[in-house]
Image (cartoon, rainbow, N blue to C red; front, side):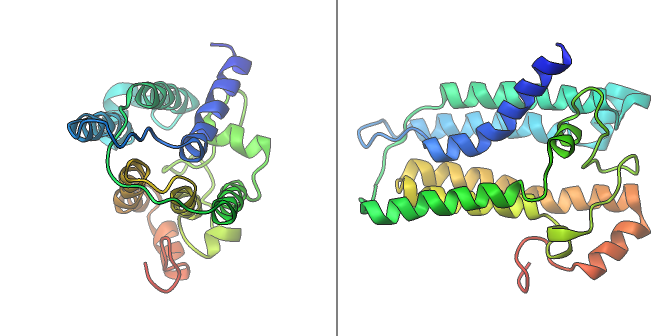
Length: 229
């Protein structure tokens, strides 16, 4: 895969997370209830692959000395995006209730959703996004190990996981745009994965960064919600 093709593909995959929330997950009041089992299983399979690839033991076995390299990041992005797109293509419509929100409220939901997207990308440049996605030739960023700088300024000085915070808020806004049980389930699954992964990720950061991350945790005590958690 050439550098340009990978760049387009990885950017598409990153933005498709917000695109899926904005577009809405499949809902049909007449769909069979067994579809819940299928969709939960489908998401669970995706999450299992995604989370396994972030674990240090997997990285060591799969990549050895190349763990933490651009190659590892590229493989992770390709597998994650491909399986995510498969999930979006094959998930089934879910039955249940829905609320008929008026036009002005749904419009406000769209505006708030876009604000969350802007917040997610606040301060990001194409160079920074290239580093996040492991685009060939770009300096890597956002890794657990000491091979990349530890982000502690800007919104990272307010909460330790500002991008997760923005994605979760976007999910809440999407429920105003698509107020139905299908959207609710998918937002709960995606949001629950983010929240559950934060302690796991932080343990990896403490092991990899040591005192630097422990000091950052003291300066910035809140993970997602200032004054709460």
